[in-house]
Image (cartoon, rainbow, N blue to C red):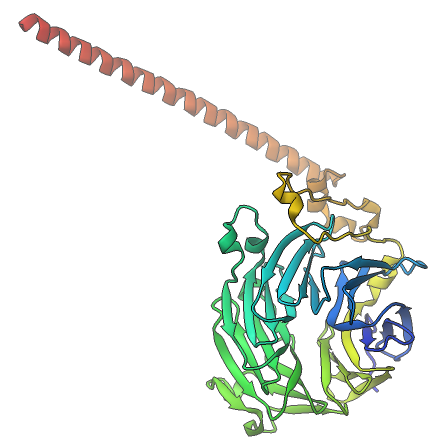
Length: 439
């Protein structure tokens, strides 16, 4: 078996949550690293907030569960939502939470739990994904519609209400339920892949919302992900196979093609699961692929050797797989995120009170890389290195000189304007005096 550096661990959940709600596994040995007890986490409802909290929505109750990675006893927190959550995601900076409840999408800011916006769709929302910069997010519904939203617009208080509630693009992407969405890198210029029970995966351009490619399979597709270079697509199929399909190469000029017509040189199949592949995840170095299946197993695959590295048994169908840096667990022992409360209504803002956002400033002792945070130090008013302070003083002096020069120029313009006014006034008076004399 090929070994890896072990910089990451694998998080898994299953539908029965017996004995654990979340299990953490060593990616080298398959041994248990840590566990979190609670209720079963629903599919596509497990997120990591920052480097200190795991958030998961329960399968059959309107409850969010929060587990601090500091692993203190009896420290699990539960938040009641307006309804049962079908999918949830956290912004890359950990400041915002988006959850789908039936046909509505709720957006909270996490510091004070304020409800920023409630969006509506015609169908039940099944998947939500952020772009890597947090500027956009996409939603997929059980009716096959794909909606692309601008985050700043939907949470803005100054945007027109009618405009703020509309997505940037709305596409009828599939003829059946969208089961998974993967957003590539590139922020607002990213590419998005959707998969569906209509036997297809589709590649979309986030800027224009236009369809770039359609890949048709012989069976339902339940999960999807792209490799880091975004040259290949991995589709988790109903049969248990994971099909790797090229996005470019010999089919680069085709908008639509069937996988059965792709040559074996361009197609790979990871075959081991005995039931549908419910979830996929890729390690940060792109060397390992994790898959979860309804057959109760989670597997680690080598991307180079195309074979199974680990086979982890669970008590029920696996609902989520997630890679996490091992260092996050270690650093979390020294830092625990603050408690969170979520508002279920936006009535406080309508009563005339402004939106209040609590900002938590961490002590600088929690920053492991002090030399790389001089910009943050200046923003927060904390101590800075001597060279940063001297540079700041020079910038202040330059600014003062520039302000003085501008003020002098303004005074000169005022004097010129005054002289021009006096000259014109004398001209008009002398002209009127000449006319009166002649009369």
